Image (tube, rainbow, N blue to C red):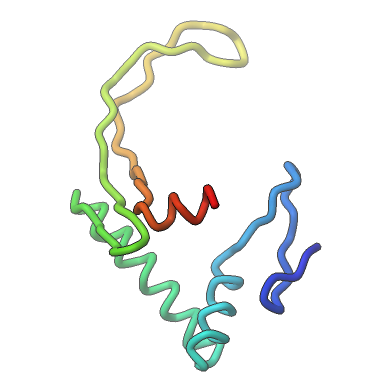
Length: 109
């Protein structure tokens, strides 16, 4: 377990560090000087608003962070990984994220 900005982060089974909703709310509470409960309500409200907009097919653009966009995937043929049998994978909608340049630059600094 590591500590980042006074918060504990847990390593996943792959060894990567994870941040969950509570960790994000804790960071917001500390940075904004609000209670953790209020910050958690804000985090939950933001993700609910993003999910609701995506469900309507809207693009969500967050300046300086990136864009969430709904994309349609067509029906296609695949294989059952357990049996190797051919199967049809249904058409579906997925939520894609494209990071803003500032985020890309931070990742590659």
